[in-house]
Image (cartoon, rainbow, N blue to C red; front, side):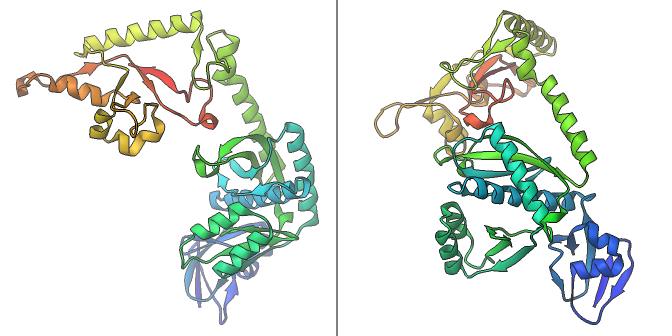
Length: 383
């Protein structure tokens, strides 16, 4: 078979070989640095066996895809550490994300001390250097396997997989996780990581589901890269509007009022007032005319606009469709209202363009875990 490498060179083999073996044939140093392979554009384990002609790219932590594999493996190490220190915790999912990884657990909230203890446990796991071994099971065996391990969320995930899906697991020592991969060959390849924070997150992102605890972390190939990233995070915290806005007495929040419902202090209100006047004056110069529409409407309007079918969960609904003759909802946007302003009178093409402007307050039922300062709120004003 012919293996075409990233640089265009071709390797020929008389028999099947794993991606790792091919990397070793190219260079022992490359094999040591390798995180995964990319076969015909698809990221795969180094343990994947290549049996036919293909394009192959050996991925290291210097590649975006390779770094994602390293971080995903680190999330599995975190899950093992959590099960070691908190055996009653139930595991769910732990993907890599843009700047690191997270893993969700059904458990009581984790403190910073808990995270520090988990880091220490993770270092022990990494030092032990267990190999990650992939295996598959038929659907019913896979369900039984996770039921015996008392992992209900994994059972749910398996049941939701398509009938023809391959159900794969990865084992590292005594810890086993349901996962499609890919992963590093060994936990020992993880060089630098840090658990950043913990917060609440709904199972599958739906507020009607259980509230889980999400632990965020990051991992890099070098300690210097990790240190640089942590310094970057510290700088972000120092510039965080949520911190500065409170210190400068621009806004505050109060638990009895609710999350995502900030109180603008006198200084903050003055800033908003100045901005609003400037925007309205600027729009008037550009030919906009002002309108003013209600803060709520009957469900009929939102059914016509499509919001009721596609955005109802994100709205504040006032009333019950089964019990009440008339159901209202606070507006999440103004476009349906402006449509009826336009429709209120007949227009000629000579009237166009028509530009309507409104300084309008909107309401959106954001999940509590998504709100932060003034960036995600439940009430805000646009102009």
